[in-house]
Length: 293
Image (cartoon, rainbow, N blue to C red; front, side, top):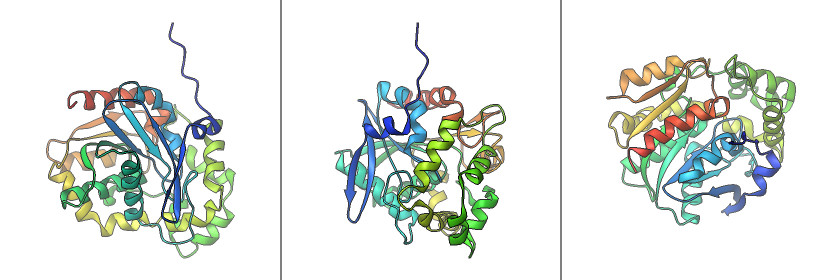
């Protein structure tokens, strides 16, 4: 009989990670499995630990690599601008440090924007990595569909630094609970672990810098959207439909604009599909990859 998955704690997740220094910054990298490479890019305001629920499945037939984006998890949390381009530079450096020159993308939230930047570089002939496919989970692929939460609006306002300093675990929990599906709420362990990772090592200081990715989605829209419209690489969107931030409305916009759009709808799932229903997400991802390997 198959034993149910026992989630790895934050400590267990990072115990199997390696620290990588890139210039004055550093991050932590998980690299497990063999086969075609899948680079996992997590969202805001959480960490690579988000991929823990699907990690065993991902690494069963493939090599999965995940790392913490700057300002989040256990990566460097600088008090300076953290543009999406810097996150993309870090993603390339992670793969180059592992000797990887060819990979698939699995992106969520802020990771969607990082993935779009990486694809835009490939479209321009300026990528050291050959991206072979892209999977996007809930995120603001088209900025006009993104519906930021009140806390995000406050962080990006002139009051951002004060809001970050005054943020509490209670407000974090409330905000996160509101973006999960009603039938798939976050566990206490997920909320507690994610909060502790967020504020560790001066994390509050980085938040107003990180949130600027919402502005970049608008200023970079044409460059980031064009590879999708041109079908640069095979792409699938897996969307938690009840997400108030980037739910069904965002998936519908994608289907309207992208030729032959490939969209998998998860009708009762919220903003974190890979945490809320990891089996459904992996099944949709595995089917997508299997036809191309």
